[in-house]
Amino acid sequence: MAVVNGLARSIEVKTRQFLHRPTEISRWPVDMATKGDADFFLFVELDLRTLSPTFYLLTNDQARATHRVSKGLGNCYPSDVRKAVAPNDFSPLFAATMPHAPS
Image (cartoon, rainbow, N blue to C red):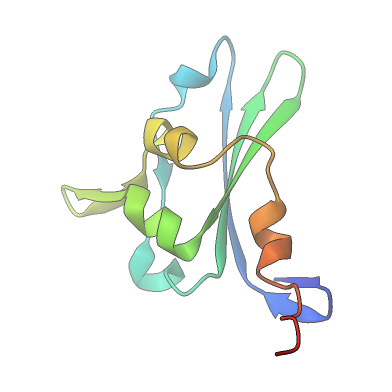
């Protein structure tokens, strides 16, 4: 849970690490049956050589679009996540909490 501009937002965080290149990460397991109500999904790629993270923030709709079920297991696949959003872009979080302009 995060509070941004006074509004509570639920964020599901999934972290995977790699040693040589991000493509070593084959999936981020996500159980949409139990976690599917989250407002946002934050996928983290952690480079173990430098301990440098790269973040991918997806809205619920974007995460659902990258989610696939195979053999009963649900995953968001890194290649789809990387195509859906720019790395280290947190603007969707703040855009969702900005007050609407008066009409």
